Image (cartoon, rainbow, N blue to C red):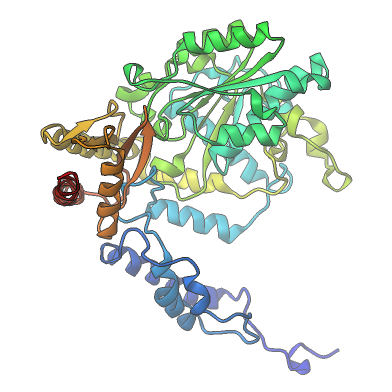
Length: 509
């Protein structure tokens, strides 16, 4: 029998150890050089829609290209179309920060490329995930009812106790817990009752809750984004939730799911967990705590109070890929009764049968998520925690909070500006005070200001709207951000404010 070369086929070196070593060094050098020069790029991409189609071929190549040529094309064509999330002057959305440890952990995850859908598919992947979720639970001082290793926790392996799973995002966590809550109710009341189920959040709750309702089959008219206000720091008041549930019950509907947020996307508001938990208990609704952003900060004792009351929740999630130096993607979800999650999400297939699963002595994480396949995310988070330790991660968070406090001080002492919502952790929400004329709320003025700031390419910020006000958000969180970057951003904001205000005054005159 002839070899592949005998048939004229090229040997591609698909997984040759020495070739991998050589090319990986090239990519590592490329990425290191990228970070070294990252401040030279416009923070927000300046390209126009469709820019890439004119730069790259319309059809795939027939022959392989050397890595050097591919990386040159990345530099020439791809980098201009990136918004540089790791830029130290990126203050938009919430951060997705990275680290050397996170990068190396991602390399191990990709290098092993295991598909640990059940324990047998890679025992280490499953067991490390359970371990690292308990580590995270301990770092956050979560109650024992959420953790595998608690002696009073029941048997999490067969679904009777609490435990945790690593998902890709909070969006997945909300979908999974909502489906679990839905099936818990419908299994006792009948599946025809799905038309009566109601889901509650606030007008500050992340939009993923509304998407989860669509996926879970909740009537679109039964999603309740309850009103918040400046007076309450845009937090959801328990009495507001209680009145909404009472009204729905009177109308023959069934309160199903209440999502409380610790660190809302818009202004960083923190919902009062104790009070909302009491309301959820009164109406037998599932309480999920979305701590995607602020949860990471709760590893610091001085911020742990934001999670007070979480012990009464049914589930909680937070994203280490936002603030704990763990490269995308990594969302930690804990549930108090894992059987509810497993019952809602598990399926069986002959090709998955194995003695471990049959013994009920192992965890099959495929039954804790939407998809069958899953990445070895645990090794990434494990490597990050070991690389920096709890003390190092705490200092990382505290440094950003200190920088945000400094920025808040500068804004507060400039009489042209006002702080719109209480600063929570490293997010400052502010605006340029409105002048006279037809723009009484100052929305158009601040919209122009944000556009002017971002057009410089030196800073990138985003906005929110609360109480009909267009508000600028300054979210400190990039791994590379230092005081000089915050100070430079403030100088640009001041400069552009003068320009925009002068133009606004001229148009009024």
